[in-house]
Image 1: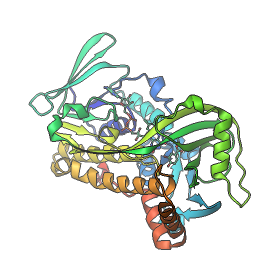
Image 2: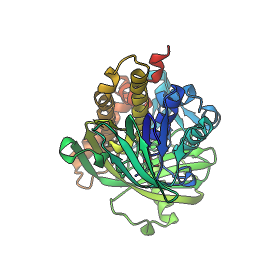
Image 3: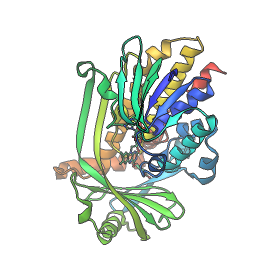
Length: 397
Ligand code: FAD
Ligand code: DHB
């Protein structure tokens, strides 16, 4: 097979990139290790920034998002048993949308399938060959057949545990990493949300987050220790801990219901620089991981994909190669901003294992400041709703 862009991985990054290339008339082949059913049901993030929502609408995959997504004009920070609202719309003119990552994936897979361009599921033994040479290609096995895709460019969109980052010689990548002393226990429960907006709760026993997916399903998280065994967290214990950490003195009542999904996610910061080596471009989690507080992972993946699609559009339309050369620089500006924001939100909301009274006073002072100063609240809101990123439309408008 021969294509212009070989895309490894059909997560938010790979699928967004594939569709943006398609809309510009650029050919691609997408290969994915898992089955379609698996990627369409994998429970992960659920908050879309305003620029991500705008892009998904513009590329024609926003119909169900517009119908089923829950637009939120603010969020609640809860600490010392009181709630404080950050009003995104008043502070920034923008808002976020709650819509599960697997729903975004379903919409993008449907768009890919209807484009008629290739998308292979359940591929095995994927390897990248000659990525800095004359004949970059991807080898893989599909339905017991060995396949080779010859490409001009390869987009490594295969997540943190994929193989693409490993195709860059080790000495050429600078790795910035911080493993945090926290993990999140996440649940999906069949119950009405207990509020209309997300609640980020700072509690002396640890962070809790009340989120949602639909008017009938909540998504909630508890800070737990890394290495926590789910078997130690029967449903009753989860509800008791959520009720305690989310409690306030203003009459909040947590609705309980059947828990039908549970998982534990470690928290880490990770950035690999540069995000390009020869014909290989790393996109999304393949290049970086941010701590979950602030819900940025999927949005960063979409922003990288849009930046690369813009750059490849400039290249294939013969306009300019400058955005391609600037890919790492353009992406890393946003990556480090988000890395800082997510780390800051995490340190403000979590209880560190070695937290002393001094740290606690600093944390409460920061929370007081961010919920009482318009300048500080605006900074949080601006980062939360998301800043603009390059889109391919520059070449067509
Ligand atoms: P991915 O979504 O990981 O997609 C990569 C794809 O590549 C996968 O489909 C994978 O199967 C495929 N793949 C891997 N290896 C190969 C290979 N060799 N060949 C072909 N295909 C391959 N973010 C938040 O903001 N909030 C959250 O609550 C949150 N929860 C999360 C929970 C978990 C368990 C995880 C892992 C992540 C979570 N994230 C969360 C982060 C967010 O989901 C990611 O940032 C986002 O999925 C990144 O998209 P991506 O396309 O870069 O990578
Ligand atoms: C969700 C995840 C987050 O990391 C976050 O900060 C807010 C909401 C969610 O899955 O709903």
